Amino acid sequence: MVQKEAASLRLLLDPLVASGVAPADLANDPIRFARAYSAPADQEVAAAVAACLAFGRVTLFGPVLRDLFAAADERGGPAAFARALAEGQVPGRPFAGLYYRWLKEPDLVGLFATFGRALRATGSLAACFPGPDALGAGIDTLRGLLPPDASRALRAAFPHPRDGSACKRWCMFLRWMVRPGAPDLGLWTHLRPAELVIPLDTHIFRVAGFLGLRTRRAADWRTAMEITAALRVLHPHDPLRYDFALAHLGISGRCRGKRDAEVCPSCPLERGCTA
Image 1 (cartoon, rainbow, N blue to C red):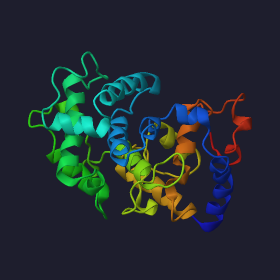
Image 2 (tube, one colour):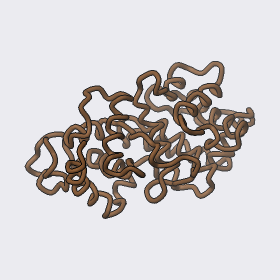
Image 3 (tube, rainbow, N blue to C red):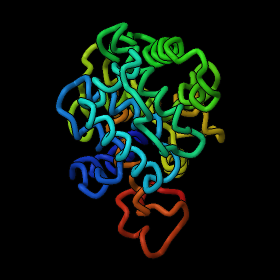
Image 4 (spheres, rainbow, N blue to C red):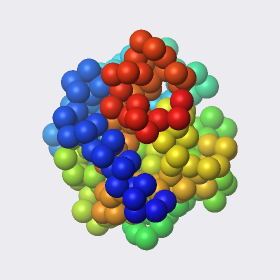
């Protein structure tokens, strides 16, 4: 991307973030579950669990996350509950009847317990994600902490970039942890926002195509890196500053994925969009 093109695109994108985070968008984003807590350990665990379940429609995974964290709160909050599960100190079935798509009740218990083992081993989830290959290192560490009898569905919650996966949910988790300022938490200072990779979901993939931020046609790790590199030209120190706003264009229905006479004229990206 040449500098002239970058300057023009920046003029389109900057107004998206200049107005701040819309309350309606925040209410429909899984980060709201982590933002409900004040203790860093609770925020870490809540963010990790919320990110792992953040696929499909928010109207479907949102109620499941609400019930999961309600059960955790009854037992001291996400971090204390995760540690207790890791130590086998939670009797009965704390998530009785809960599931989300292919993640069944035992998988949800195993997810919390895995993060509990990480807290016991390192003191925080931050220690699992050292630089420079923070994402790959973190996934390797967490995979090693999975229960020996972890199901295929639970193991699939920990994809790795070397397998080609875009790792959208874990890129999103790192964005939440590293970027300072709303809507993100900025808990981790050992990583820099410049090192983050875009969480590549269907909305980002589509809008990136409309704006000329990608040439690849597969929604994989290489495409996530391509889009991130293009955004890094626009904002070298914080390429993901546009991620939340761009994703919620699609999540909210303000971008319908094709030319629409009803919504397109009011979109701030219309002048640069090829839809």
